[in-house]
View (cartoon, rainbow, N blue to C red):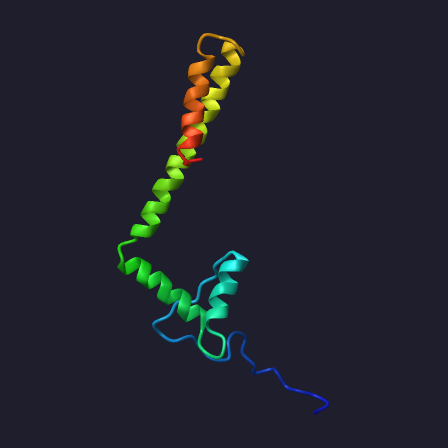
Length: 116
């Protein structure tokens, strides 16, 4: 080991530049998602390439799975909003009010539909 190292001509950044057809980005993933991708490439390979491949397959499929998930999320959001409105109406009508049974029935129907 030397007593002194000269870094005056050193350059900051990656030692090897990324391939010209790749764009470096910063992305936040859930830890379990990242762990799963990393576990798929043990013994060689790149988890980043695997993530890129998964995104490409999704993109080339037309994004149907994402559209379906967005639609399900919208339905869940609307159902939650409807239930909150029904609970407010139920509270205003009183426990034995004339609309209480109808509001309870609608709430049960929404809850039973599996969209919450």
